[in-house]
Structure formats: structure tokens, C-alpha cells
Length: 248
Ligand SMILES: NC(=O)c1ccc[n+]([C@@H]2O[C@H](COP(=O)([O-])OP(=O)(O)OC[C@H]3O[C@@H](n4cnc5c(N)ncnc54)[C@H](OP(=O)(O)O)[C@@H]3O)[C@@H](O)[C@H]2O)c1
Image: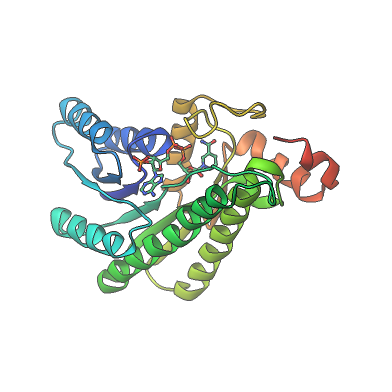
């Protein structure tokens, strides 16, 4: 079992939900995000329910790149080793290009791609030294095709993350370092609660149980929940752009 797990973006949504699921399995947790208050409450909750589980929390802005390396190192010291890193922090602000929202699109690109790159670099430095570890990247089903409007740049970053994950996997193939890229479908969290369309969305607990089950199998890639997102992935890949344009 991967005992010591680092999760970024743990102050909300999937990060918080996965932390609860891994704690129930007896894993120690290193949790980070920009907002400390929700993580303090989460730590107290988990430690009260599972007295044998250790929870470490630290403030981290994944766009503060030197801080990413410092915080990951500090967590390694806290826990002795890191067995799994889940690159989960992300955001989804944006709008159609050419409509005056460059700042929101840029911020999403930077957080979801360069921020993820920094997290993968910091994780792999540690894993290469340890000669072990499981890197998990949280991409999205939106990575499968180009998406319009508010999620154009979001989908582009998730496609980039998916490709980067496969490249890392190619790099460490045949070593004890494992890499999994997870493509969630819609799971209800603050990132999508206001979307006009979120087809086939599941509740947070169902989604996080499915995520943790998929991650523990350490696949190269997983669409989660598998039903309906595995067949939807095939539909999305081959559907005419007219269909994709109406999805969200
Ligand atoms: N929910 C879905 O349906 C779905 C589907 C596909 C993929 N995903 C991906 O799943 C991941 C988690 O999203 P979510 O749905 O759980 O949304 P969420 O509830 O909004 O959570 C996003 C998390 O990322 C953190 N974060 C955002 N910007 C950050 C930054 N600059 N530095 C550090 N942490 C940052 C937030 O913490 P702070 O604000 O406290 O920093 C928060 O904990 C994202 O990568 C998202 O793209 C979600």
C-alpha cells in the first residue's frame, strides 16, 4: 500500500474528498493549497475519526514555483518518505478567445499547466532519489477534444497535462517509479457547480470513491467514473465538432 500521500488542491472538492477516502484506508496525508482554514478543519476531522492517521498541512500557491519545491521537500521531511503525489490543484476560469478575458485564460493556463509542471518536477526529484513513488496527475475528460468558450483553455491545459504525463511515463518506464493520468468526468465541486451544462455529473462522494479506487490500481490512464466516461471518451473522440460544441 502507498502509505504516505501528498495531495495538492486539498482545501476543496476532489482533493478534500480523496483525502477523506485515503484516510479511511489508513494513509498518512500531506495536504496543501492556498487556503489554510478549510485544511485545518479537514485535518481536525480526519485525526478525530482516524487517530492513527497523520495529517500535515502547508500553504502552497502552485504558481509560486520555488515554493512548490520547498513545500514538497518539507512534506518529505515530515513523513520520512512520499509514496504518492497527486497533482490535483487546478482552476477553470476563462472565456472565448478575443473577448477580453486574456487574464483569466492566462491564469488558468499557468495554474493548470506550468503549476502542474512544477509539481511533477518536485515530485520526480524526490521519487528519483527514493527510487520509488507513484505520480498521479488529475487531467480531465475535456482533454479528449478541443472545447469551446469557458473551458477552451482549461481543456487545452488538461490535454497538455495528459501528454506530459505520458512523456514522464515513457521516461521512467521499467523503473520503480509509476505514473498515472486520471481523466475525471463531471463530479460536483465548486469548479463546476455554476456550469449551465455538466452532463452525467455525479456527487462528490461517489466521484471520490471512484477516483481512489482507480488510483490504487495504478493504471497508465483512467477515465473516472469508468461508466459512462469510457464509452463517452470514444464518442467524444470521433463525434463531429458540432456535438462537442454543445456539450458544455
Ligand atoms: N470536479 C470535476 O468535475 C473535475 C473534472 C475533471 C477534472 N477536475 C480537476 O480536478 C482538480 C480539482 O478540482 P475540483 O473539482 O476539486 O475543484 P475545486 O473544488 O475548485 O478545487 C480546486 C483546488 O485547487 C486548489 N488551487 C487552485 N488554484 C491553486 C493554486 N494557484 N495553488 C494551489 N492550489 C490551488 C484550490 O485551493 P485554494 O483555492 O485553497 O488554493 C482547491 O483546493 C482540478 O485540477 C480540476 O481541473 C475536476
